Amino acid sequence: MTERTLARFGVFLFPHVAPYSRVRDLAQQAETLGFDDAWVADQTPMSAPDVIRLEAWTLLAALARDTRRIRLGTLVTSAPFRHPLILAMAVSTVDHASDGRVTLGIGAGGLPEDLAGVSMAGASPAELVARLADQLDVLDRLLRGETVSKSDGYYPTADASIERPIQQPRPPIVVAAQGPRTIALAARYGEGWSSLGGQPLFGDRLDDRGALDQARRHLDLLAEACIAVGRDPGTIRRSVMTWRTHAYASLGAMVDWVGSYRQLGFDDFVLYWVGDPDRDEITNRFAAEEMPRLQSGRN
Image 1 (cartoon, rainbow, N blue to C red):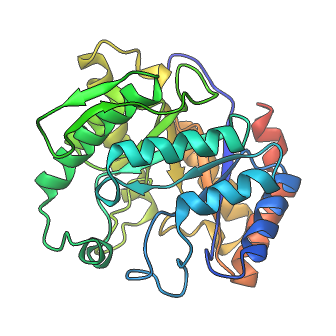
Image 2: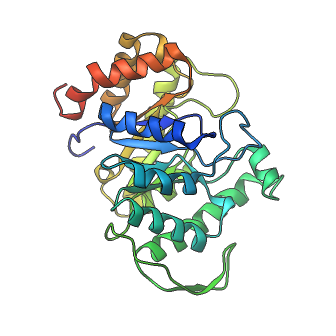
């Protein structure tokens, strides 16, 4: 980073299941505790039947009316799920409903079960990345108020336009990326880059040192990609999720985990509420006892 930015903290509002009032209460609790962002996952019941049963953007529209300060967003919307015109309309609608508090987190894929559920079983990684690139091109222009026509790619459209969002020049986009091609898209389009902290999405979990080393390599790729498009690497926020970590072993472990990634240059940290009393207690204690000093820069 070219300058030290203040840390931000978000939390996943799991599970996204009925009754809606339970998710609403979690979002209001996150707001009361001082979290900066409340996130929902954009998946289907095909991949996570016990955790995801409510559609992400409809859920965010409801939460927009039941919260006042906290930012709301997806980590992450799967690019293949929607045409970019429909997605841009959803983002703009939630931006208006929330008085300018929405963030679009978006990624290339979805879990295999989700892809099968939307008639995309067997889609190759190359196709998914190409779809993400197409999505971001159209979304970026629509959310800036442009009228878009294109006849090529995966998402042709004619004279497409949407209600201009409140946030200008457009709501922020956070691109989830684990490899060179998607990291390059984050550098080109994203106000933020979402990371798993060096851990793989599937397969064997890395030890903490291995994950930090991999995260460092990803940061180097991001810096190179920013320079390649003429962008200062310090202008993109770096986000990391507590994915496959030992951070929930204790409050001290969470503090150490945040400190390790903060030292690497990460700005934004995403914790989880998962319905496990011990893990959720660590999240709550961290928010009450440690988060305020980190948000204010009192490291």
